[in-house]
Length: 198
Image: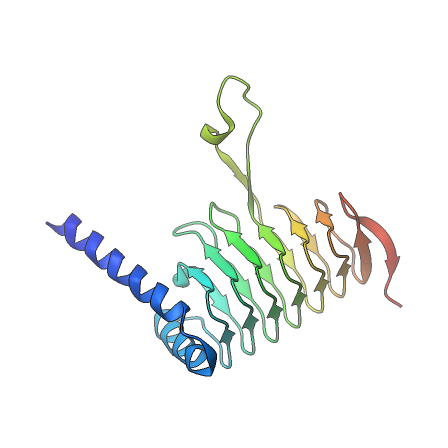
């Protein structure tokens, strides 16, 4: 019987989350803010979540103050392992996926700009075993750290085990597979340094 109650409770929570995610306008922003603030112990002030966003496992998500998540954003933390921390004054544009869903932590500093369609994912599929389907192999997880005052352009992909240092700029369309030095501008697939902020 307890198992059935757990399933019903889970469904009710999912229905509630889906309903509040689709409320448009300022009313929706206010409803989402207060609902998430009640459910999440680490929720800052003046957070704006635009409609149709998906935010999972609030207990493992920490938002500073003055954070904006644009239309259709996805902030996905793992139930047990993966945590997401977003600093103050950070803007997350439309269609951004920040996924710590299968382990590995993601930490985003203060005053970070994240352009549309960016993917920040703390795990990758393993594929070394040829006799096992890729979908049946494990994931390899790692942390992603994005320091303060970073600008991440549109359509960027950031993979596990990467640190982006303070003041860096990631050009649109880049795939970041290695650490980025402070105040460095990187571009390309894979991303390489193309300049410095002066």
